[in-house]
Length: 250
Ligand SMILES: Nc1nc2c(ncn2[C@@H]2O[C@H](COP(=O)(O)OP(=O)(O)OP(=O)(O)O)[C@@H](O)[C@H]2O)c(=O)[nH]1
Ligand SMILES: [Zn+2]
Ligand SMILES: [Zn+2]
Ligand SMILES: [Zn+2]
Image: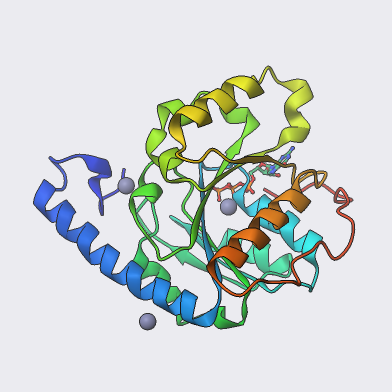
């Protein structure tokens, strides 16, 4: 439950107040977007359920690009700085944003975090949203693209059950595909669901465990960056993606 947005419950947050909050958020998001565009930084709003593999995906990206692309991240959680610590350990400059009771990031929280962070020195700036398949999609943060992380263990029906997030998604990253042999996951049903819900269906299947799909994801990010600002010719895997030698921390 989220005291800020009331999770769409008009008894908790009256409709008019909710509208005002969103209008104020949109103003700050426009301001953030101006910052990102002027600095030539591609800002990505990375959303998905708790445990879908958002942080692990960024760790895998860091392993793939080495020092050839400047990655940066802010990471939102209700409590703890844990994800930011993991990302820093993976070589991604990061700060955590603890939201307390709010189950999503908003533009003001992101703007405040920018003051603590050399975000101008990044090529790809990830805003790892709070793990939640609903509210984060409602709040514009000033990002250039929305990426939704969906893991194979969540089930192929999620786009139909949580359409708002998928409606806003520019890309769905299907994670943990190394687990597919152990699951009864219907990939065709997922693709059908995405066709129904996403305006421009786009999905990349990846495994943070064995590196599958990370090159395709980098290619998508490169194209996206090319579409919004100066092309980033340096985006390429710096070395072959290998499975990590020991298991990830969660
Ligand atoms: N097998 C497998 N496990 C994965 C993969 N990606 C993530 N995991 C595991 O899934 C769990 C959750 O991953 P996280 O990266 O912490 O997920 P998250 O979305 O960042 O979680 P929150 O920030 O808490 O919402 C961890 O135990 C990871 O090791 C993958 O590609 N394959
Ligand atoms: Zn909420
Ligand atoms: Zn500002
Ligand atoms: Zn995380």
